[in-house]
Image 1 (cartoon, rainbow, N blue to C red):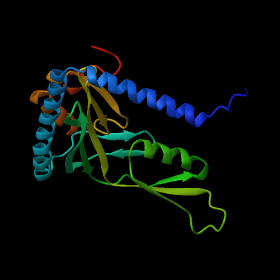
Image 2 (image 1 turned 180 degrees about the vertical axis):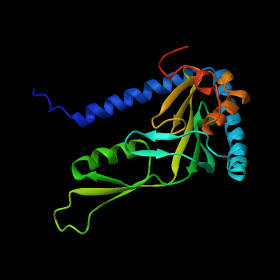
Image 3 (image 1 turned 120 degrees about the vertical axis):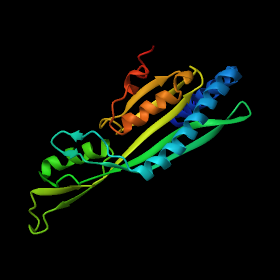
Image 4 (image 1 turned 90 degrees about the horizontal axis):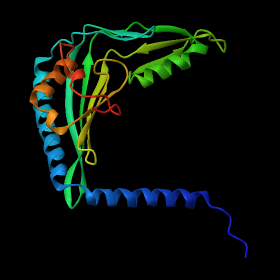
Length: 226
């Protein structure tokens, strides 16, 4: 009897179904104490930043650092503009627990000067700006019909920044991801829930404002262990 032709779609669906089933088995084995401990800490993080963002918007503190994207953009003399903390919940063992907590905030200041770049380099620079989560616009020289050789890239005056907290119930940890907090690339840390107490969150806010802070030394980078 001839075998039916191989279905790549069915193979993908089987792999996804196996992954979902394995995750559900793993979730059922999780300790309720671990889930509660991680979830309580995420709730405390949400409450802390809910108040911190409101206070920072009123105070509008100056950011005591520069952000530099080499040969492309330099931000300085910025202030804290807006802050918002959001969360999403997920069902786990018949309970609603935090799926993540995210702090979004923006900094405002003088706009970096526009860039005049050769057409052949424009794509490379645009990709670097997108990776750095920097808003910009790009236009060609409209005075040259069909023969423009340069693009003008205008960079937005503000920066969008993010701090994200994700639970890892399996390993009893909270993954903290910083984007545009102290540099133009994401940095990911692995915190034990008990370590994310108020002094550490205070350190994180100081880092966001460019003040002296020990936050970057508070936990190992994700994947490097303790």
